[in-house]
Length: 222
Image 1: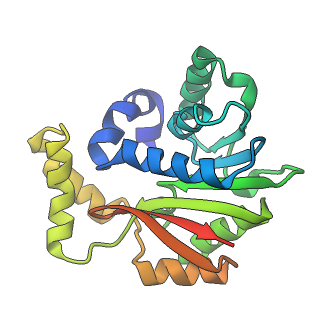
Image 2: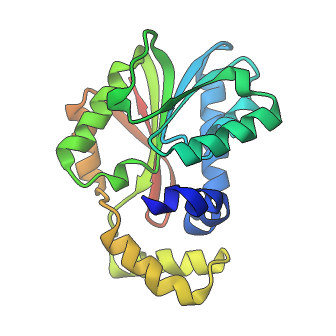
């Protein structure tokens, strides 16, 4: 996707905080939960690591956690690597350019994060395959955190999403474009569909811990 390459990757950090209400809060809440759940020396898999914001946030919570950053967009990973070098944490991060289906790693992870990935996958079976693949890379009691755009419950939800972006600093003239993208560029699930997919992939308990209009986050507990 062009928005994750070249100029799109360079402007990603400026765009994302305007497109996702509560973006920084979501990361802080996730960090708080992981701080309580994980051992002092933990390995964390980040699917769709992008420009590295999740890893940067978590690296400050515990200086012994190690990370694997996985993303199919090389330009995004290059930006992440530059950030990690500046922050002095590059040695704590392994990089994998590709999808989880092409990812081979001998050890299991204590936790995995999959933020804003599944809503780009159109096919339900491919969404399930992603969840199953993540499960295969987790320790038996590992934790999975998912955040995604969900289906609107009402027309008000759909319109409010664009209005929220405008209030966060997105120019009003781009609202129509945002509404079009929300309707055509994403493939969200409703809560029932997500629960079913997770259960089919072997995840027993789903705990919602964040919601900002249509963006929601879930902690999957074993």
